[in-house]
Length: 339
Image (cartoon, rainbow, N blue to C red; front, side, top):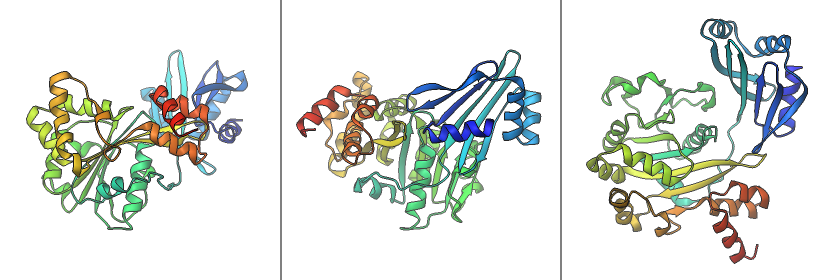
């Protein structure tokens, strides 16, 4: 029964499932939760769910600590799961993880040129569960065709989400606190910090100043929010060093039932480099960031990405407006284009 529910949810383009003992099972398609079963989840079905997905050591952790998380492979799909079993709360949450690398559809040449640089900082932002890790994995997989760089990955997620390449070294999340000159970093040319955190940001800036490339993931829904989070953590001197090494920021969101990736980009365009550095001063003086002052070469809005996907018929108009963070601007842009 549980296996059937997992398979049924995928056929309905659902990407998340909520199991709560005594309640109906819910699945999420796009932005909406719907009931996927007519009956409430019974205790024997809860036990079947654990038997299906949990390894013996995971069951022991659930029994002793009251929670556990991990990955379960069902047919061609990989599910990330978390279980809670505490007093009156028996709950499991499943979300689909992309099991195969997809072609990255960001068609901005400057974006790819900046990613190929041997040194500098690149921020990968987006809401939770927006595929930031998968995007970095796609980028690393594509960049290896240009040049093989020995890449160290700090990640709190299971390593199965990363491509199986000889040039990847998994450092784990605990090693983040190591000094930047620690032997663990010897020979590494690119560092990926996939923890959705700005912890040790000064360390990563210094690594870029040593000549390395650093990719960092953060949880932020827009470029503006990502920049504000960063600037609030940095002293004035570090802000200047940050912009000297910043190559770009990409925000990824997943749109519609098919979870089509859409992107907002902020890129270190050499013709506007002084204006980019002035962002820190602007933030210090008025506490806000005006990204509309930049050209399309530096700042590609989310709406521009939405329009590109509309033209390619990857999403429909309803999905476009529900995904936009500025629907009024999107409406004006579509009218200008006669769409």
